[in-house]
Amino acid sequence: MNSHGRDEQRVVWAVVDSSIGPLLLAATGEGLVCVVFHASDEVRDKTLERLASRFATEPVEAPESPLLTEAIRQFAAYFAGERRDFELPLDWSLISGFNRQVLRELASGVPYGAVVGYGDLARRVGQPGAAQAVGMAMGANPLPVVVPCHRVVERDGGIGGFGGGVETKRKLLALEGVLPEPLF
Image 1: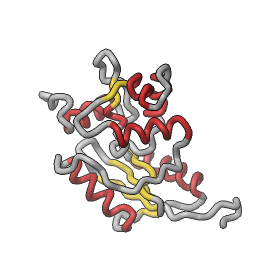
Image 2: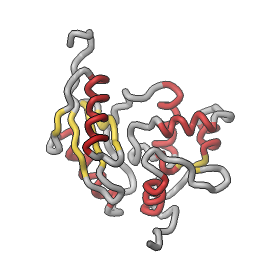
Image 3: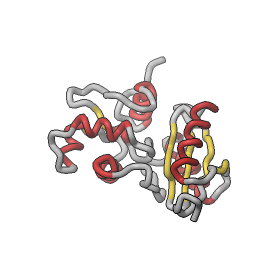
Image 4: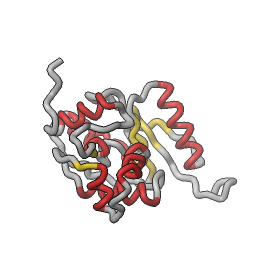
């Protein structure tokens, strides 16, 4: 245990290139713990500070780590159009309560190439009036792409918001065949 009474846990990370820009992947012994879009130096540094604070250990850059090599391989296959589902252990410790419930339903119940409305997802978790809260859960998702918050759209057919930016959401939905590829 560390001086705060918590068990120390190793956190490893890597930045990988993708068709939507650089992604920071981080993992613990439990599994993939976060995916961060637009992983510039500044974004990377802020993310690593948050992880260090949360897990009481300094994250280590280790793309060759067994905790990350499979995640990196699966992300590459996904962006190459060769993989539809991620089969990775996930560490859900950065999210709890309603948000975790919604994200687990999303991960298990909305397959590649499909979309769901915010209200529909709220109904699936037994909270039919909680469409806005579902939107907040999507914004708090520490595991985007793997837990596919890009598949949640507005009831009227609008694409909705996205923590990685609407253009990133469009690209992910186009990759999955939900939207046409942009013309330019």
